[in-house]
Amino acid sequence: MVKICCIGAGYVGGPTMAVIAVKCPSIEVAVVDISISRIQAWNSDHLPIYEPGLDEVVKQRRGKNLFFSTDIERHVAEADIVFVSVNTPTKTRGLGAGKAADLTYWESAARMIRQDCRREILSNPEFLAEGTAILDLFNPDRVLIGGRETSDGRKAVETLKSVYAHWVPEDKILCTNLWSAELSKLAANAFLAQRISSVNAMSALCEATGADVAQVAHAIGTDSRIGPKFLKASVGFGGSCFQKDILNLVYICECNGLAEVAGYWKQVIKVNDYQKSRFVNRVVSSMFNTVAGKKVAILGFAFKKDTGDTRETAAIDVCKGLIGDKAHLRIYDPQVSEEQIQRDLALNKFEWDHPAHLQPPAAGADKQVSVVGDAYEAAKGAHAVCVLTEWGEFKGLDYGRIYEGMQKPAFVFDGRNVVDVEKLREIGFIVYSIGKPM
Ligand code: NAD
Ligand code: UGA
Image 1: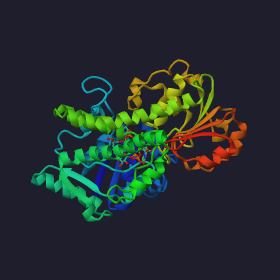
Image 2: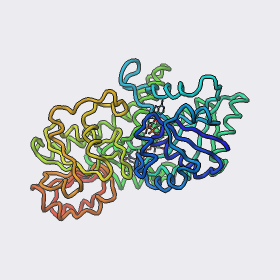
Image 3: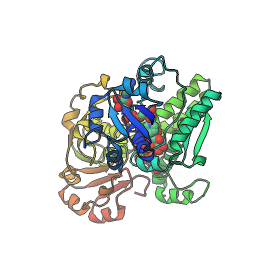
């Protein structure tokens, strides 16, 4: 039996290995991690991450050919193929701080791989998106494998290819050299993020001119060369990878003396930051230039729907902006715990992946923020509602009931274009929706 060991039981390692176990019953898969609590959760009924379809896949194979363990050394030593899927956050200190990838975790994983065991290194970047991870893994647009252009390198590529070939058509398994695979990952995320910053930049112009960004996005998306996907204006993109991968790309460009190329990609992040601060400014300026002491309901904290992940979520910057203006926030998200929200709002930028740097909550921030169990409770007595994640349930809320319970004038600031603007205005709300006519 072929044995696979994956170091890192996170958002990528867990789902990817569970899918390999389902699709390749002849392969034994062990997912290992230094975090005892994470491994305990993978072995329990409450998996450490929320991802549609993941529970079923794990339940199907766990204990058969899928194992979660903290015995890293043993599983690495026994494995024919070792995947490394550990966190690679942005460095917060030292050389390249704020841009370069922090390879501390990667290096520690590499050191756990037995020194006496000479292995061929491949690059196998993952392209799954959170919230659709299982679907993406079952039916990937492509699998990318980069390897050295030597006979050992080519042999290793073929071995990994044979794993994916259990369910991925051969023409979708792309093989390249190592740098092409590594850069393709950064480039794919940079291109995707660039589309969002492009449509978000248009959203500001739409508001200024009276155009509707959804209509503009639809009109340009029907051009088959542009395509309709990834053109939804929003309060800003979040997630663990877009920003960090672009920053890493910028760093690599700068290290290679390509200042103009670096500057080009940096702008994608600048526009994203601008979109978040533009939203905060809109809230404050609409509410008579002050939110001090006012109650603001925040609907949604995760960086997108169908995940409990809050890494780099736009909600953090928006909430911090409103707290800075002394607002009192009542936050509701169907998948994010109070503990997580308070921790996120207490951390400095880039620190989400560095628990060692965890700091106490900023003075007063905890008192200004409460986390509640549903949207109605969040909006009760509030002066404004801000929608920051596009959870399906926010579309179907009884906005008449919400209006009744709010202070007047009652404001809705929709950062995800989920509410029916006309209907809400009929109810009596003052509505701001990203990129829509006022
Ligand atoms: P994660 O933080 O969810 O999981 C990483 C895990 O690695 C953690 O559980 C951590 O405890 C563990 N770990 C760290 N060092 C270890 C070591 N030495 N030995 C054993 N375990 C160790 O991270 P993630 O979101 O799964 O991302 C993993 C990699 O995949 C990153 O490089 C990321 O850029 C990339 N990626 C992420 C996504 C995504 O959607 N999250 C998608 C594609 C690619
Ligand atoms: C993204 C990529 O889509 C994956 O291919 C990649 O593997 C992954 O990053 C990674 O490397 O981590 P993910 O961040 O999970 O996946 O989710 P996306 O669906 O890409 O959304 C990212 C952010 O962009 C979210 O905040 C989302 O709300 C926002 N977004 C997305 C928009 O604002 N508008 C859109 O049209 C699409």
